[in-house]
Length: 554
Image 1 (cartoon, rainbow, N blue to C red):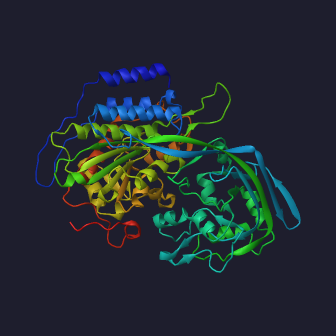
Image 2 (cartoon, rainbow, N blue to C red; image 1 turned 120 degrees about the vertical axis):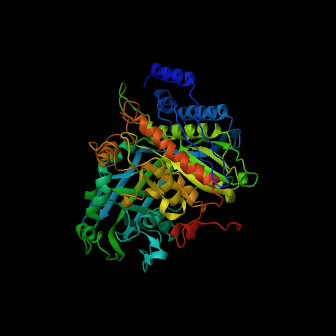
Image 3 (cartoon, rainbow, N blue to C red; image 1 turned 135 degrees about the vertical axis):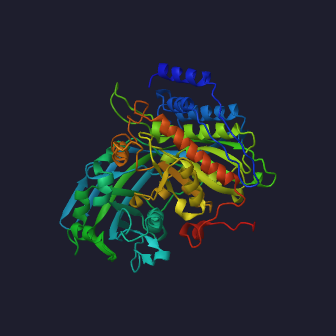
């Protein structure tokens, strides 16, 4: 989008004089509000944040700094209190790492063959966050999925020694695992390997993973930086110093690993959809890998604001409303080509929704009973980093954060007749979401993509890991217009526009759907802020039992 278009949107936004209409009926338990989001404001916020001026809002770049300043300015205009560590900003120190592709050399030695591997044709590898020079020369051991899940009586490392070796493991999880628990344990694979003394991790694609992300798409990641944040002592968040490198071989190279073993890759594939458990075994041969990484220190802020609650007691508890402000940035390409991944729906529209909810709440005659924190998180696209930083370095007491409502990539390309609420089944927030949906004449649809593990894949999960119930709402799989196949629209966006330069304001965004999305999320947050008791995990819930903090009796 051109600067001229941006100017037009800003003028439209600044000249808009539409304020939220509120009808307040106070009671002891609840305030009932008829929210009227302003579609012009939703358009204006999205258009600015998705403009070429911001160059894709990659965390740690000037474009993202401009986005953060814009969000902070909007918070100030609404009269919200600064809740960062420097005004509205909570600045984070990051290490950024880029792969030096000219440093790469990989050799696979299998019985009877020594093969030099070609980057991107035969394997993909990313930059190291820990070291500038990485070196592997290791024996290999197949360990199934590389998962250890004691609550599920599952251990892929049982009876095997991987000290100073490279573990070889499939992506994903056993088909019989509960989907969200499986997604949680899948995120711990590299940690499992490092804890057991491994020095490398070889990640095998599966037919299912290749369907979602073909090996050829790794080419799009070339040039993208990896990031992590630093603790005060200089150590790195979520780093595994023992692991020299993780590597993903092509399907053909993966098959060659098993030629001299009792089971070939097709045999192992056949086991993926069964309940049969893998038995670890050594893979004859060695992998050698050399790579270099370039490190630099950068900073990037979360932007945090507070609307103080109206109840003298409950105002010391907080509902956190979050959305990530960053996007992918720019891709590599030729001069004159569109290289900016503007991130209109991922996640300029989410930030626009949060800003409009903040405006609606700040315009209420009586503020919500609990305080509401509005947090624009940086570096979500780098691994939920801004949210994890805020959750570990909160600017309000973590034990007083009662719930998180997260906004990420609402696909506003059809007017939806239902919503999906990831996380709603884990706590009594499920009832809150149901009531909000019903108030907007929407159905609540169970997660239609359990194999994707969405509950662990956005910023709300950082709050879950602090024991805070959370919900992440998206438009559903049914359209109000029966001629629209909502599932097909969703699939088309993910295939052709997700993390692509086409995720911009040229998309046929339905702003009426954006208004509905804003209202339903505002209703969820308002009920959470006004209900007498803080949300509770469901009895026996895995995430509640694993992460929930002890709270004072109410």
